[in-house]
Image (cartoon, rainbow, N blue to C red; front, side, top):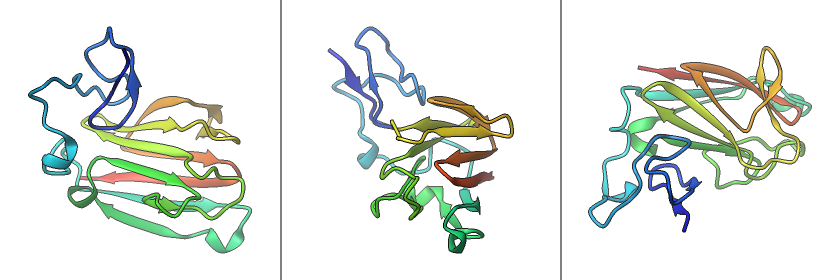
Length: 151
């Protein structure tokens, strides 16, 4: 029976003991849920900045948001829906487009089954899941964003 990661929410096969996305261990009866733990203690990064570099909705270009990882935890969602951490009101961006997991190794980017895809720049390859270090530039639909971690 598949299990859901207590850190990033990814569904994993029962025969693996660590999450395929963030590396968290399979929950047991003694596992503390993310809501019971202090957010932000999983990495040495303090904040993440997201900036819209280009978009078909020209008024979005230059929009920037910096989020304190101690306050929000190590998972950031990006998409058109208002319940995302970073909202991009561009029709080419899916409601739930991208999940960003901040790990000790940097950014882990996961496309959430978006219609128009997620592309890691500068090479432009389409990704489902990718590790990206401390900075990444990605295209979501017709919008290009840069994600930067700060220690």
